[in-house]
Image (cartoon, each protein chain N blue to C red):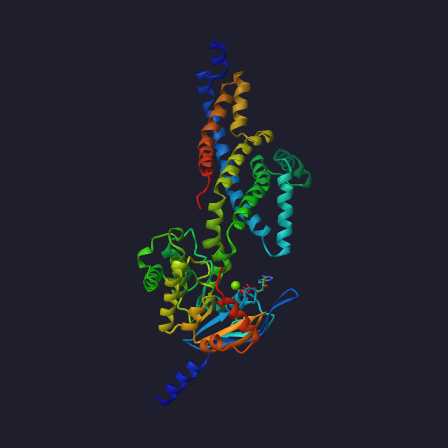
Amino acid sequence: MDAFLQQFFNIDILMEAMPLLMRGLWITAQLCVAVVGLGLVGGLFVALASISQRRWLKYPAIIYVDIFRALPPLVLLVFVYSGLPFAGLNLTPFAAVVVAFLLNNSSYYGEVYRAGLQSVPNGQREAARASGLSETQTLIHVILPQAIRNVLPDLLSNTIEVVKLTSLASVVSLAELLYTANMARSITYNATPLVAAALIYLALLWPLVRLVSRYQRPLAI
Amino acid sequence: MRRVGLLTVDRQMRPSLQIVSLSKRFGHLTILRDISLSVMPGELVCLIGPSGSGKSTLLRCCNRLEELSGGDILIEGRNIYSGTARDLKTLRAHTGMVFQSFNLYPHLDVLANVTLAQRKALGRTRKEAEAKALDMLGLVGLADRAKSYPAQLSGGQQQRVAIARALALDPTLMLFDEPTSALDPETVGSVLSVMRNLKTRGMTMLVVTHEMSFAREAADRVVFMDGGMIVEEGPPEAIFGAPQMERTQAFLSRLSKPVG
Ligand SMILES: Nc1ncnc2c1ncn2[C@@H]1O[C@H](COP(=O)(O)OP(=O)(O)O)[C@@H](O)[C@H]1O
Ligand SMILES: [Mg+2]
């Protein structure tokens, strides 16, 4: 039992690893803000394009979504980081992660938004247009608020997936939370930093998971 | 003085709405053919006819929610199918439209429903818009429900809010597409009485309806449509009392048969 605690819950090791873990957590936080923020905005444009009446917008958007949902995010990341330099495009690890996950993530957010936009009855748009609102005003004041409310649980679920996804960034040596925890483990020959990293992810995501469960009770109409 | 008087007469003689040999196709299907119809200021015209005869499409054309295949529509003498996007915005704001399914915005309370287009399409301040909204809600008897959400109102109340929402934009013309067809029988009366009240205030109205008793008693003119054409039009006594065309007679006799 003692050996187990020594290996997994070692307070001294934890204290020693803490500064490193905190630096990793900071990078993870920056990644999440960048990837989630850009994904939420990019996904909206992808969704708007994919339901557009204009074919030159609609079909490219549909193909985009299909491709980047089918490609494994890790493959995408390695390609952006190690493949693009052959085309003369060198990205920092942080930029590579943001680009790769944005491609993946905006397709997923895009599909969620699309479902939301399509869930708003056409009469809403008609009424807004008939009262003199422009297409953009109709979208902002009438369609989007309803669309987003209708798919809020799915937007949240997707955001949870994105946060977990950021741990893949360790493969391109970006010093985010998992990477620093693993580094601390190899320095200290002790698993405690990994346990700490897991607990940090849990603390970050558990409230979100709870929230999704609450929302996913049958919606009152 | 005399000149001014003449001008006033001139204006009064100009139709609020003038539809000139309008045709509308969807693909190869002709939905409306050679429709000509004028509505004079202050007039209430009821549009009746079997479902699928093109009544809704005709109303939607009057607000440019559809593009025409032929003909013209003039509102207050202005062709609504020419002109800039800005013209279209004001045109739409000043042509009130009321739908069968109300189409209130469920995420906004009643006050916000009635102020949204006032602020965004007409550029009124929040204060102006709210004052106007409360006025209009008072007119439809719902001033005390300003803070309710649509889902908390009965169908009849929702439709009255929708009417207030359109009225708040100072329309010169109101278009109603079967405003009472989706209502429980007990709330139909409240909506019709709001519409009668609008008529006494001089509002110009084009109303698609299946409420024949309303058409008979409130309309200045009744227009019967079938198969995308105007079959017959005239004062309600004539249309209901002595219809000239066979198709009108057939339609009206089908309606008057006891239900069930
Ligand atoms: N967007 C559309 N595309 C194709 N056909 C349509 C469209 N809108 C209406 N129609 C057709 O036009 C005809 C008239 O419809 P509508 O104007 O709704 O009639 P009404 O309101 O008199 O019942 C119907 O046959 C309908 O199927
Ligand atoms: Mg109809």
